[in-house]
Length: 462
Ligand code: C2E
Ligand code: MG
Ligand code: MG
Image (cartoon, rainbow, N blue to C red; front, side, top):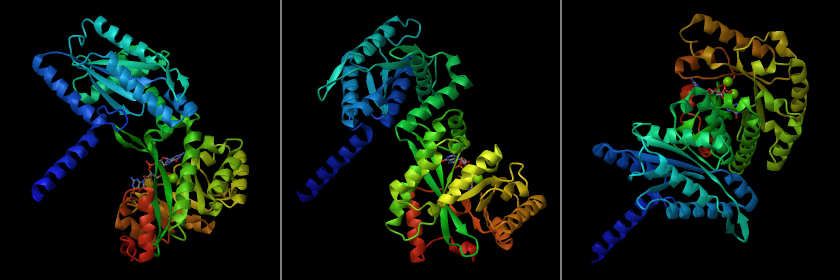
C-alpha cells in the first residue's frame, strides 16, 4: 500500500510539474512553449484538411504606463483582465496563449480563418479590441487600456510556426505604428529590412523597459600568474524566441537613438550592484571594465551620473575601468580629453578598446589619461600564424609598456596565442580559451574557486 501511495504521489507531482511547465502562472493560459506546440498541431491538422489557420498577435498599447502609474499588482490584474476578455469574446474553440510580458496570441482555426474572405475575422478582431478598450477598475482606479493586433494566415503568409508568429508580429508592429487600437493583416512588404530594423528597435526599447537585458562577465587573467584580475562586463539581450542576442546585433541600433544612454547607464548600475554583492563574499572581486559609447560620454552630466551610481552601491571608483574605443576617443579629442581628465580624477581607470582598428598615433594617445590598452582581437587571432600580425602585436605591447600602460590582449582562443603573448610580456588576457563570458554568479564562483586554489584554468599559464 505504501509503495502504491508513493507512486500516486509521484504521478501527482509529475503531473503538477508538467502543468507548471506549460501554463503561464498568472493568467493560467498556455505559455509560449506550449502555445507554439499547440500551433504546431493546429498547422498539422490544417495541412491534412487543406484548410487555413489564422494567428492573432496581440499587445497592450500602454502596458508600461499602467505598470508605472498603478504598480505591478495593477499590471498583473490588467493581464488577467485581458485574458478573461479574450476568452469572453473569442469563439469557444480558439486557443489563447501568453507569449511574453503583455504579448498574447490566439489560434483561430474555425471557418472564420479564411484568407479569401477576411470580413468574418475582421469582425472578430474588432470585437476583441473594442472589448479590451473598455475601462476597468483595479484597486479603485479606473484603468484605460487599448491593444493592437497583427494577423497572419497559415499557409498563405507563412509555412511554419516560427514564420507565422514572426509575420503576425510584423503586422502587429504595423498596427502599433499606425496609432494602436487597431488590427493589421500581414503583407510581405512588412518584412523588408527597414521595417525589421525599426521593429527590432522598438522591440529593444520594450525589452529594455521589461528588464530583458543581461550583463555577462568575461574574466581577465594575469598572464604571468594565471590569476583572475577582473572582468569585462558585456551586455546581452535575451529574446524569448531567439535566445541570446549579442551586442554587435543591437548596440548599433541603440546607438542610432538615445536608448544607448539608458542601456549604458543600466549596465553601470547592474555592474555596481553585482560588485557590491561579490564584495560580501570575496575581499577583492578585481577591477571590472564597462564599455562606454560616445553618446554616453557626451552627456552633459555624465560625471555626476556615474558618481551617483558608485555612491549608491558604495563601490570605489578604483574598482571600475571604463572602456572607450579608439575611434570614439579620436572623434573630438579636445572635448574628450576634458571629460577623461575628470573621470580620471575621480579615480576611475580608463582603457582604450579595440586598439589597432583606428588610426591613432602614439603621440595622440599620450595626451589622454589612459591606464590600459586593449589590443583588438582581429590582431590577436593570427599572431601564431601570421608574421605581420605577430609583429604588430609585439610592437603594441612594447609601446603600451613604454607609456606605462597595462596591455590586455582580447580574443585569446588558443594556447599558441597565449604562449606568444606570455613570451612578449603582455600584461593581461581575456578570451574564449577560458570559456564563454559568464553570469554574475558564475564569476563569483570563479573568484571563490581561485581563493580555494581549485580554479581550472591556472595550469594553462604554467
Ligand atoms: P568589445 O568591448 O571589444 O568586447 C569584446 C568582444 O569580443 C565581446 O563580444 C566578447 O564576447 C568577444 N570575445 C571575447 N573573447 C573572444 C574570443 O576569444 N574570440 C572571439 N572571436 N571573440 C571574443 P560581444 O559581447 O559580442 O560584444 C561586442 C561589442 O559590443 C563589444 O566589443 C563592445 O564594443 C560592445 N558592447 C558590449 N557591451 C556593451 C555595453 O554595455 N555598452 C556599450 N556601449 N557597448 C557594449
Ligand atoms: Mg570592450
Ligand atoms: Mg574590444
